[in-house]
Image (cartoon, rainbow, N blue to C red; front, side, top):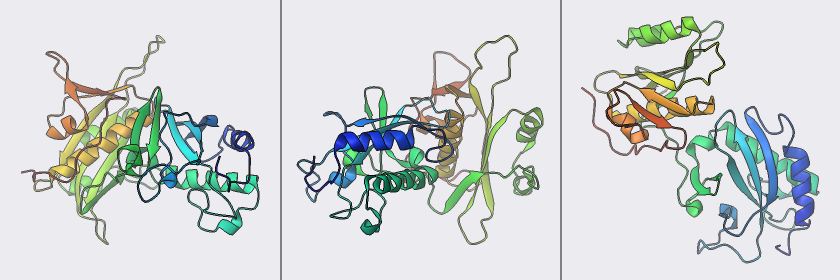
Length: 304
């Protein structure tokens, strides 16, 4: 362990376990599974990198293993054992003077995890698979850099459908077909409805949407079927990168809701970019939770 770190690794692991392995420990959707020392073949946290992008000698890590919402993945985040008041702060800490005990260091780690997870870490993080764990990183030290999957010049997010919300009338005014989404909403089978719009001060015009349906309920105790990407539609003239981003986020919404597989009959090249494929002579394409991949949003033709 680095000689500047004032607390024993065993004590760090125990304090983080006590803090993280309880209900609602970090933020909504977080479930702590374990906290343990890092193993030799696991990727170091990027804060352990020096100017040569090599791990600094003697800098150790602990690993937080977690579930995110109902996502089937088992995720892991490596936390470096870096100094408190005597040196660099832990991840996300800008005021080292706030770290005066192991408990206060642990609270800073919790705040860092909260900020990262609440701002989309699971979707934008670089990923590295080690055994059954998927390590999440925000830098190329893990092999893949974190990237916000948003097309240049556009933004997307879920529609607000709660009390006082609409039912997609703004999308209908833009010329998009909202009948399927409204039908699923009325049946209680709407898993997610995302819309895309020009990223400007007005947040308009709206240029596209994606709709995912929950599988129908079975009263026989059978496992639920796959979720379904029911709609992917753009306003003519919108770049294909918007379709790819809508598909990626729609699929992640389904996976984070517990879907093991997502199917679709939508005929759009954006689906292939995210990992959808056809099996044999099937009439539909599908992607399983572990096959989802991040699309390349640097290139995309304009849709007619």
